[in-house]
Amino acid sequence: MQTAGKQVVLEFKRRRKSMFQNFIFSMVLLIASVCIFGLTDQFPTLLGIEHSQWTAIGASQFVSSIFFALMGFQLNRCPKCNLTIAAHSRSSYRKSGDHGHCPHCGIRLY
Ligand SMILES: [Zn+2]
Image (cartoon, rainbow, N blue to C red; front, side, top):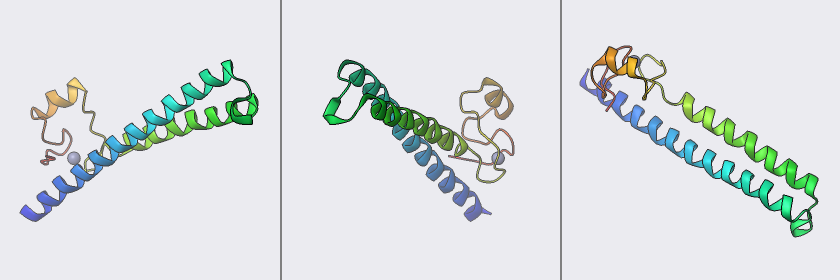
């Protein structure tokens, strides 16, 4: 029982780390796409690449950033019951009464 609880804590820690990495990667892609849109408006043939191609690159980065953000959000789940943990939801805190436990099944997460 103790080992299973420790595995849940370790798995939750791994998921939170992956979620944070996905969020950072998503923000980098989002900032890069905004920079591409901003730069190519001023310099339409930047680096010899046409404006329409830069627009396609910026749009694909923007879509990728949304994809990584959603993938990261999907990782914010309890390893035991696999339900989403709304870290900033006031109702989740009210239900669990403890920030370190899953609001759904009550298992210790960290
Ligand atoms: Zn749970």
